Figure 1 (tube, helix red, strand yellow):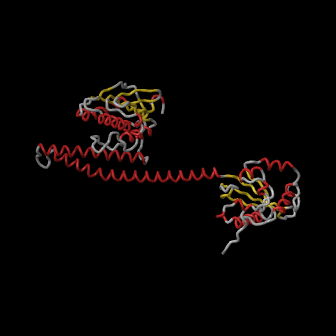
Figure 2 (tube, one colour; figure 1 turned 45 degrees about the vertical axis):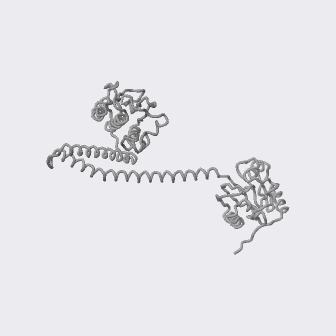
Figure 3 (cartoon, helix red, strand yellow; figure 1 turned 90 degrees about the horizontal axis):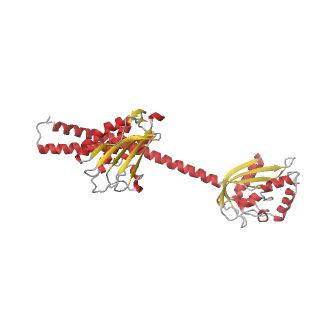
Length: 409
């Protein structure tokens, strides 16, 4: 079916002289079918002064007969350019303007009011998102004499809503992806731990001679198997801890703990590795008076991660120092080393998952790059933090801060 097309303005033809005459009656305080806008220049002043809303009147056929300052500002037409034209000029072509405007006036006439939101068109062709209210105007005897139309520009609100929807969708997608990744890591970790534990167990049995005597060469091979198994198991444990942390599955048993005791227990665990590299681990200041409100097992895990990193990156003959103290309302443990240090621009990047400085295909360093990421997550979950101070070639000092137990949680 071929739709009827209107003149170039896409509006039905009507005598502008007749519309302007009707407008004159409308704004003069007496309408053709009775007193609609009674009295006053106060009403005219009120409508004309509103600049944030387009407020204008239509005759019963939808032709513009009044035009306020807000309408001129919002839609771009001067009064002499729009009075006498059909209000379908404000609708985009895809809306089939004549059909839509006729339907809107029919609803307003039947129900007394019509409200809608949608795209509208300015004089210059640009579009804006509008809230539109059309109210039927009737004479005391019920005769329809026209319509009042109020339009608000809601473009910014709509853009904000669309941004919020996009952000929410993006966040939901990220959370779903993280959940899937965490579940995969947890499953993979559990599946790998079982055969790795079996490898370690059988290697240990062979070393003990349970299956018969072993030669010195075989002992060397078994030692390498055990070392590789323990290394892989440490990586798997890191992955499992990371996946649990991301999924929020870690429980924290917060209590008053002694940081001095944590340091005392942690250093001996790293001594064999440090000794094999001729690295000394020393005590810095750390009195028994330093207490924190934290999960002791998680704090120990963080300190061991820091010590392991320090020993890993410190050259042979270097030194690692562990100290503890109180700074304002925080209790601290600091692990410093004489290694190559951390470039200032990398001081945050090293706490990202799977990041390890100096890693390459020929690098001697091993690990997943998860130790520092896990440690910071654990620290922040206990209302603390983990930061680094360093200069290239000047070593690095990693400081764990935790709530001081003597000053409340």
